[in-house]
Image 1 (spheres, rainbow, N blue to C red):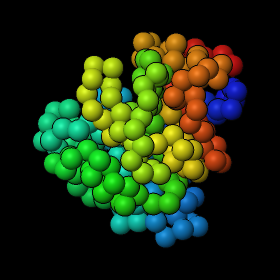
Image 2: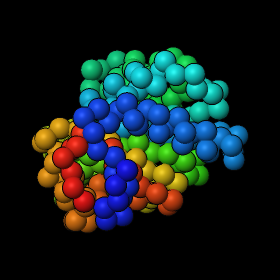
Image 3: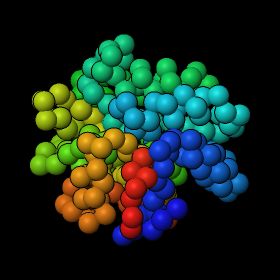
Image 4: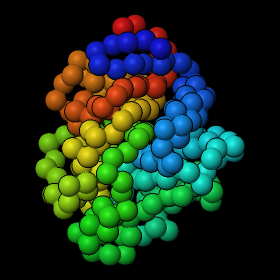
Length: 218
């Protein structure tokens, strides 16, 4: 683990293998202190292999609660649905909260807010090539619906629901997981502290980055 800026960084060719072990230890740490561990999960392609790995682990599933960090306002059966992809990867044992996207967007956001804890123990977040995280996009103003959830739009115009920056910043430990050369510029922007959504999210205790930029030198 290397330190750069305000991040602790693990870089390797297969970061999901190390992250799986790290998350098990982190969950055990929080469960030694509290009855339930609350974990937010990123959507997108990058973390799905990690979730498949976790699905076969002997975790205390009954004491874990999982939440989507964001969602597209589409049917849960849609191939664009984060819930559909994460449910299939993580398995049926996971207690996974979801956005009820059959509702109008504002009602859906409020309903989801009521499912969320006061603060998360762990947030696993992705980073886009443009520096977005969850559905917080550069240059896109989010519509506040509650203290925890906002409405946003992706650059292609698709309506999104997202955990708010302020709520994510209450999280004990934030873990960014990013892979692929197309995200190197965003990674470097995070280390420089540039004004991008991903740069503004920090865990109250610690913030980690797991990446496949194994040639990274702090």
